[in-house]
Image 1 (tube, rainbow, N blue to C red):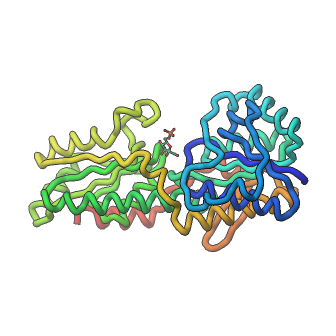
Image 2 (cartoon, rainbow, N blue to C red; image 1 turned 90 degrees about the horizontal axis):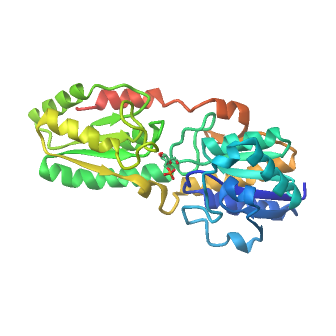
Image 3 (cartoon, rainbow, N blue to C red; image 1 turned 120 degrees about the vertical axis):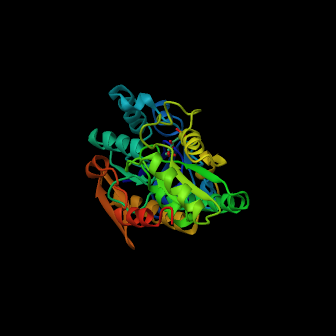
Length: 332
Ligand code: F6P
C-alpha cells in the first residue's frame, strides 16, 4: 500500500482531529502518501480532496470538530453514489481508506469494503452507541461537558428549590445521559432503552421535597420514547415536554435546559486525545497489514480490531449495572 485517504463523516466528535493527525503522521512515517477528503462521503463523491503533509495536521490535537469537515450524504447510501466514490479513489490512486464517524459512517465503510476498497473505520460519536468497542471518540469530552453543566445548574436549582430538567444528546441511546446523570448526581435519568412513568417520577419528587430535599435534577436523553425523535422535530425538544408534565404534576417551579451542540465542542479530554491518537495509528497499521472491513476499538486497556459486519449489526447496550445503581439512588 502506497497511498491512503482519510475522511470524517456524520456528526462531529471531539477527538476526531487527534485521530486525523495520528493517522496522517503514522502513514507518512511508513512512507505512505495521504489524501485528506473534505466533507465525508459527499466530498468523496465530488472528488473534494487534497494532499496532506505532516504540517497539514499541526496544531489540531487540542481542537474539537474536524479539520476535514463533515457532512451527512444521502447520495452515498445509494449504489450510484458509492460507485462515484470508488471512481474518485481509483482516479487519485488511493489504495486504502480510513473513515472516522458513527453508525452511518461505519455502514458506508462496510459498503466500500464490500466494493473491494480496503477500508478501516474509527468509531467517533458522542452517543457512544457503536457496538463492540467500550468507547467511541467524543463520548468522554461530551460527558465531562454535560457534568460541568449539571453541576452549574445544581447550584442555582438548590438556591431556588426548583425542578431542573437537563436534556442531553442521544438520539437512540442513553449512554451520555446515564453516565453524565450518575456523575452529576441527578435524581432521575430518563433514557430511550428504559420505560418510565412520569407520574411515579413526580410522586418521587414530591416525596423528596417533603423529606427536605431542596431541588431535583432530571437528566433526559433527547431520544426518550413516546416523544418525537430529534431529527424529525429539532425545534420541539423532549426536555420541554417532560418539563411541562413535571410542572403540572408536581406543582413546583420547573426549569428546562437543553444542552444541545455545546456537547459536541470544547477541547477534547486527555482520554479522547489518547483514544484518537491510538485509533488513528492502529488504523494505518491495519491497512498496511492488508486488513479491510474492520474497525478499531478498545476493550479495557487494549486496542483491538473488530469485524465491521459485527459492529454495524450491534448497537451497544447500556451498562445495566450503571442503570441499576442509578435507579437505586433515584429520588433518595
Ligand atoms: O452525533 C450524534 C448526535 O449527537 C445525536 O445525539 C443527535 O441527535 C445528532 O447527532 C444531531 O446531529 P446533527 O444535528 O448534526 O445531525
